[in-house]
Image (cartoon, rainbow, N blue to C red):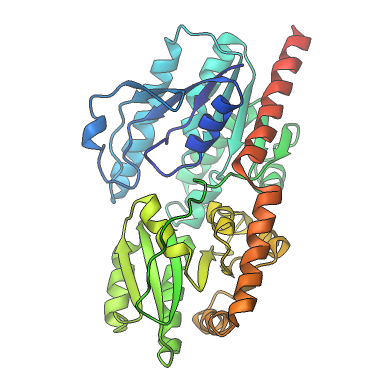
Length: 401
């Protein structure tokens, strides 16, 4: 098949769209991606990409759209969203290449799928959305918008309109379907549940040699709903143990987290490593006593499966889950997690429980996680399911001609 893949974010941004596109190519398909120039997590368009409009990466044709760079302030985020919306729509409107199917992937914002919808309707080809984030729910959970505001009503109507124009919707968490049915009142769509793949396949590398006896790792987005403030506060209860929390990543709350570490005098208990390259972060995973998956339980977003939960299973390590809903169910099914409630005392108790497990017990938890990943969640398994949905959509489209 010839597949047009619309995703605002793509390599070198840390988004699973890259793994999906490249695996589809390995499965024998021709994939063209329309995406923005890389800026997410970098606070600027990467200098080496400012003049690049087209490139081929591991067999994937990548069309780069100019976007306003996303920085730390809210205005830049809004401009970033709108610039991709308008410029990517303009780009696909004049694409001469013909595709068999359209595939889009939506993180925030949902308006990023509009170019895919435009091409689908103009050329009468089926469009399948892989929904990884709920709109406008995500704007409420992060505190960006009040659900009683006029802006929420506008975003609600816009989101419903976009979702309804998709032919199929793949959801990365089962509870997404409840949100579509109960909140958005969308019930007549073909919903398919497929896990989001890991951001990248684990690569066995030389692990870091830790200086402290016990080490807990959190890597990823440092936003409001990731509960990093509670995790940092939990270290106050662990001053009697040589345990250190390692944080890697960036996000809207990182400045507050840095201040919190300083205010609580936890510099010797919490180490912030900044934004690190993927393969450098991996070195911290292999020898960690536990990897942290955390998500606020608020709203429908709090019931979903963070990509981090899938990513961590590969590394044969115990997982500390501060999570409920679908994410908790996934980790329970894997069998290698210890869970905590959303308060610093419960988190510290769970950390204490994990680090005092025997080496054999930690190995057994880690093995359970890896076995589950290999059996159910490898990138090839997940993308093969996506491939089946795309093939079926093409067949159904031909049947209706």
